[in-house]
Image (cartoon, rainbow, N blue to C red):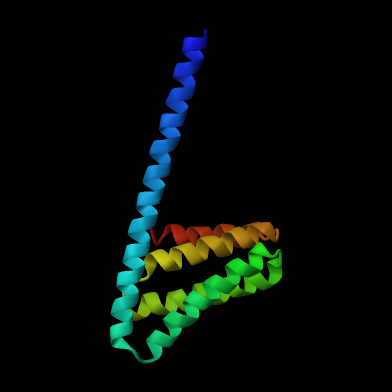
Amino acid sequence: MNDLLHKLVSAAIAGALIALVGYLSANARRRRAAREEAAAAARTGGPAQEVLRQARELDRSRDELAAQGRGPEALARAGEAAEAWRVLAETWPGRFRAERRDALLRQGALLDAAGQTHQAARIRQDAAGLS
């Protein structure tokens, strides 16, 4: 009985470790792509650079407000951040899709928390279209 339990627990731990490594690897690739996109955007300069800085600041502000339990303010920032990433994605087609998708998913989560499930579902559907 102990051997069976040991095998089951070992398999579960191994599966969890594999999933964690996959998640961390995907996150590292996403961060590397974001840095490369930001560097490309920085080379172009101009108003788009300001929008990129603003989008990052809105993301940071949204996350801080959500962590502080200030849902309505975090939701407002989430909408602004999603819009900024949309502008960037349209300015550079093919770039900033991951950031826009992440911003939409965070906005959807905040909408869910606020009880706005229909709007959250629509936002998540938009985000799924960016995958």
